Amino acid sequence: MKFVLAVLAVFVLASTAMAYNATNVNDPISDAISEVGHKAEGISYCHTCQTHDCVVQHKCGDCWGMSDFLAVELKQRKVCSEILQYATEYASNHRSVKYKDATGDYVRFPYRKFNINMLFRDTDGVAHGKLVSKTC
Image 1: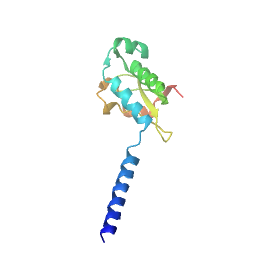
Image 2 (image 1 turned 135 degrees about the horizontal axis):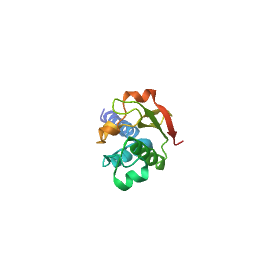
Image 3 (image 1 turned 60 degrees about the vertical axis):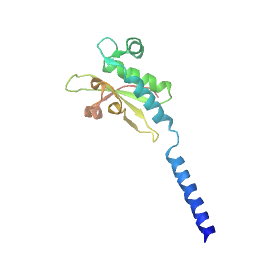
Image 4 (image 1 turned 30 degrees about the horizontal axis):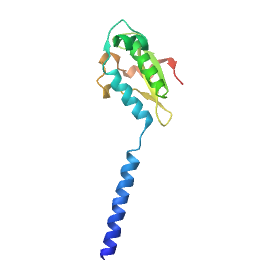
């Protein structure tokens, strides 16, 4: 009986370890999204910058600048993205980013998950957005 319990205990421990490892496998796309999202947190809104390089230099930009910033940073981490333009209640030409996830679908960048200025965030209008650029 002790032998059966010992074997059962080893099996349970091994199964738990395998399940833990399976759910904690490194995901390079998620890691890239996290890195870029945290990097974007320090960027404030201004009308000065519409490109990645300007945003990096001045630490501010508008939605065009933030979109270019996100697209370039994602591309540097080998994550495909697209910039979409659409109307919002604040602007007729707002831009935001979608990225290609592990299944090959383009999904909205999780602006709200990070402390990114709300003026950069996407809105539901992105569903009707016009593709402006694509990195892959």
